[in-house]
Length: 496
Image 1 (tube, helix red, strand yellow):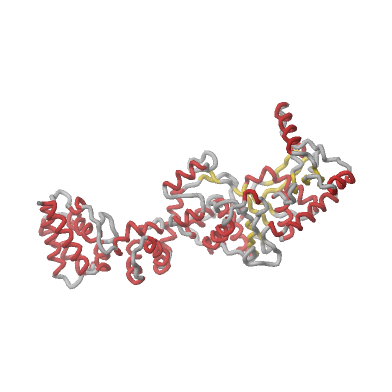
Image 2 (cartoon, rainbow, N blue to C red):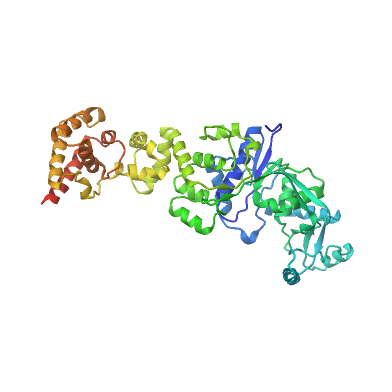
């Protein structure tokens, strides 16, 4: 347990769709903040304007709200540590990079792209590590200031220690040590005046008093650089937690564009908005994502968000890469669908029917939900199981009406006998209709599968449906008889 409230941030770049890795990072931040009574902050890292995608920020915010990960501070809710978009904090970064220059921890670099490319090619020819060669590292400060004053284009580089080692502590991996000679004098401020991630994220984490930094293990390569930047300012480092990366379902390598395209064909995606549109629910997605990298330490793996908050433990985070298993997503999603209250589930599936232009009345839908809930893996599964309830007329495949081991004429005779039995009943509920239908089956010397299979197709238009008698009760006797008459007409026409 953490002994004080945690201040954590989810800091995405609005450069594309919100993906599964981002959702898990946000979730872990949220769990730790809520468990410790701390704050969960949304910060938009939008300084890379070349990669900025219009609408991406809104998708990120909508995705967090859909997942139920409401934040305490952010660009749309405010807070005492704003602004929460990095493009609105430009002057702050300029002040801090100048402070590093004044401390001798950073320096202006006037090398042109052409010179840098030439150096890179020479290093490749010599088969040595490509790196900045320090050409401007020891420029006289007065000369550098004069060149800046004259308007000469430049960047600001961090003056990495050139000797010894840097050791930085990752919470789930332990100490990570790198020789400083292998580290580069990375750019902190670009020539256009915008900071790089290396500077902006470190400054913001300090100024926003972030206690724990969750981020992908892909940042481990620059971890020593970031630790050195924080130390150059003399700041206390946050607790760094580099999360495992996601591998494609085969477990071999990261998900590529080809695998993403294949996944969507199969009804899956690694993007949150896609998964929402495909009928997955936030409860299932959170449960699935949380356990890819975190061992809850319990035999019971179905967890609600409050249960995850209670059980979350940084000690149980796993640094090993996690293969994406969409079968488990189906499992968790179906389990959480079955945990929903009937009226909640009804409200969630209703839009799928409306999208297909079905007229849906809430009272009928609420009766249908108990019949289909156990069969749903995703919300859109409601359509194949229950759309027929709302169709004014059914489109029936005539061959499906022919009972097994019977021909169309014999099936028509059976349908007429079914009609005669149901017509004389007060209603077609399970309690009233089942016993007479079983008796009819025995009298005809047929199996229940033959008789009820024919009746199922006649009433629902499909060979697989929710429980038949319960469905018939919802449809009502009048419509059941009408559909049976239609089935008899179809069978008789086939017999001619």
